[in-house]
Image 1 (cartoon, rainbow, N blue to C red):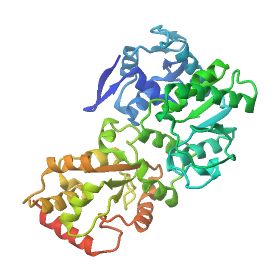
Image 2: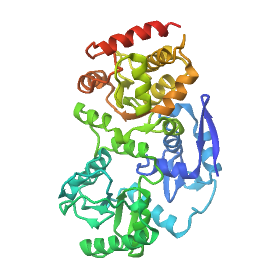
Image 3: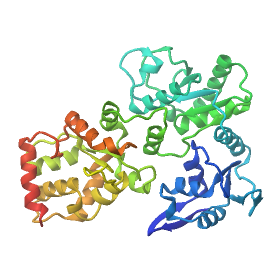
Length: 433
């Protein structure tokens, strides 16, 4: 069951699965009047619509409309002690078990143990398991687990359950590449190892932070032993997983060092098609972003500029910083990336004007071809969006980051180089056409 709604001319698609995914890991606010029941937990209806659409301004929709939309999706709606519908949650025993875990977390119960999945990126030599995996994504999961204050373990595709201090040598096995039988046996092994480490798993609430292959392989074996398995990031894309950790207080922080590390981790760069498909979820907030280019795209820019552009990070910027006069900005990561940089007019985007001018020169065109430019950007670019809550420090943070990263296509707050001087010439040549 799915439906499409429109808020101030902006269209959103809603499904029961999407609603459940968006409220996962959140805590329901106090219900003042009307509530919606999602897997045994009652939420304010407008909070759910806000989470489901990514629209933080709740004045854009009414409680009555929210109730109608959620009821049409099959959820129970009520007010006070009554209910306007009575539907039984669907999905069988497995869904009910998962719902119990979500409800326990939402109602304030702490998890008992955290499991973190391994990743492909590793050191080239042996190390303690907590330090062997080196991707930014793993660091976010590890930081979350450490900050939880609960026992935590690593799910190794090679070794099963691993303690953070266990010494491991690098290995190549990656669970999604293994057979179904291997994953089944691996899941049983992990459950046995966890039971040996903790004792009886009956009633234990286990918070799993790992890819779908890891969760699916282990959850049935854990439930068989009476555990409750919580997968707060179920169904989220890689980009949305990163946003989840960034928004979580355990990981938070927007120091220059932290943001620089995030912006220059090319492994986390998201294809533009995925950004657009997300409809702005988790991106309708202020923040910073970096743009990345592939080999073929870098060659195109090199030809147009007459200066070598290396594949990788080419541009960084911000969205939503407090203006110099102290006024608030309404810009968001979504608006900057999807509406301006990927829009139809280069006049509204520094990056788009620069890229369009270079490509027009490279292709011998008299003007910037907007449609061709957009297609080229989708084919050759990726982006890393980083939500940042403190808008008062964004401008200072951008200055610090540009000084450190020095992306070649940035023109402000960076040294003038022959490449940038040529870029300015091309922007004047094509930008006014």
